[in-house]
Amino acid sequence: MIFLSLFSRYVFKHPRPRRPDIPRIYEAHVGMSGEKPEVYREFADNVLPRIRAKNYNTVQLMAIMEHSYYASFGYHVTNFFAVSSKSGTPEDLKYLVDKAHSLGLRVLMDVVHSHASKNVTDGLNGYDVGQSAQESYFYAGDRGYHKLWDSRLFNYTNWEVLRFLLSNLRYWMDEFMFDGFRFDGVTSMLYNHHGINTSFTGNYKEYFGLDTNVDAIIYMMLANHLIHKLLPEATIIAEDVSVMPVLCRPVDEGGVGFDYRQAMAIPERWVDYLKNKDAQELSMSGISQTLNNRDKDQVCSFSFVVVHGCMFSRVG
Image (cartoon, rainbow, N blue to C red; front, side, top):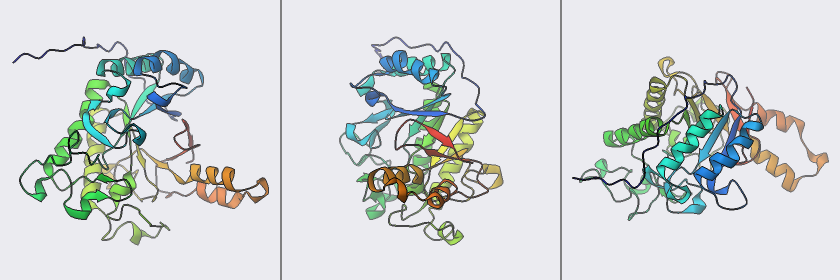
């Protein structure tokens, strides 16, 4: 068998930067980072130096895995082991990561293991790993569909799914030198109701009950354990609106193992104030409550300043 590669294999030249005490994270979608759709090399040469000049120390990249629907921002993944061809080649992405490392910037990947595109032709949907529903990549019946995202939901009870997702994480770390991950849609993974039409008040019954997806939690514990074994200085962030207790406690303490929780309520409050309220209607108590909406046992929480708007701020 002959394998023909049209691209010369990129060789990394720069080591990973050390993990900062306080991450200052710039979130970016390479194709939407400027006035015109751009690609990995343009972003590396023209945008990364500006990010470094603004005193950020970490870049979080969206829409890296292949997806057919561009307007999904990369969240309807069709091929988990392929670089999004809309922005360049795999070697171009390696050049971007290496360039970031040369500037002292760590690079996190926005990884989507909470769901997948429902596409059959170019996605995993319909591509079963066996002959029964229990051997599919996705849950059978209604449980296998997210009605708001219009996508398929992984069956975390299947060992082949666990191998697929865990090897996916190692692939991106080993092959592309990513320094960590931001896990998208963790709330949907944590609960069988996916957080839909659910208000979390902090009562522990909301977190530890029949609605808790134990198999998904076990997967996340395995994932975080693996990542930190491969790269002890990795940074792992969970996007969670429920403020799940022990989400950011180490696995060996019985926690899920994330380093940080990304709180989503804060940017929504800013948007609400800007769109719907006058200055005199600002509620300082409401702002304070939103900023401090986290379990005191959490290691640390982050929050967007704006929705998908490039910066995190430390809140605890």
